[in-house]
Image 1 (tube, rainbow, N blue to C red):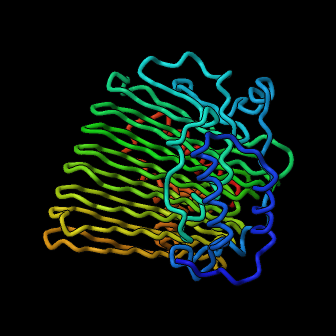
Image 2 (cartoon, rainbow, N blue to C red):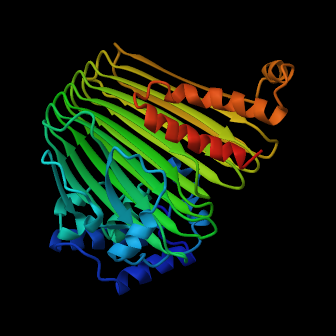
Length: 430
């Protein structure tokens, strides 16, 4: 979709093109070729505007004001300080990515059932994905990715092992991080992943992260994304998943940080008998903008998927959920459901919901729903009549609305951490 080819370039677009010419980024010949193709696509398409349907509610061209230099790689001591004490769970096997660079020096002994290498080792397989105008995250990531992880999880992996991928931004000035992860969960394997993004407030840095995840025959995985970047950050994230036959995947997303967020989840349901479960919480305050876009492609028969997102918008925050379910003609017996529920807590905030169904099969169960409301005054009165202050009563109702999404997260310690993030966000805005 080549639109935007004759318009003047923005400062950010011009900056990205000039930056690419100056940098000598890692990768073998195939990676370098892919990088050149990506920057050529950016030169043709530019950053997406509202005219690109998938970005209709998030005009990245207007919102991204400048291109930033890649963040520098810290040494071991600097990285250790950056990781610091950020309430990491003790039982995680943690893989630290500081300022966009994987720091293997801080990794404990790698379990035998995991094979891990770094993107900068020259993995051609990391370069994947379309370079169309609506795939700006992949275009920027392919052009500028500095590091990331390649991982294979074999069938002997303990189902109790949680693999924590810790993205930490620690510089005291604006810079860009771009990372790409390539992860395979082998046939019959089970794996738990927790991906967390953290950074300082008051710094306008950019974070771009793309993960490609493949689940093999009868494999099981849980993927948790906790995005709590700094309050002036721009976070562009993309999770691309392929489900094999009989695979089961649970995805949990919680967005509590950043000034601008675009979180994409793209899933190809490629194997019969597979199941996908997505649960999300989006907290939008101040003048931030959060965009969560999911595309689920049911390409085979006898598969199921479920999506539930709960959103809270307050102050002057704006948000959007775009959820698309595609059911191919061959994908009979598909059972897919999607729901988006939102609380608006101020007169100046907003949230848009755009559910879409594209169904070409005739023997399916597919449904979607969306609601937007304020807190129920009767419920608020009930709590206040029993001596609970109004602020605490409001927070209790909001938490009850959100915690329902996390109820089936079978990990008490992780659930407590996520609820703590919600508490902290609420306390800062009451």
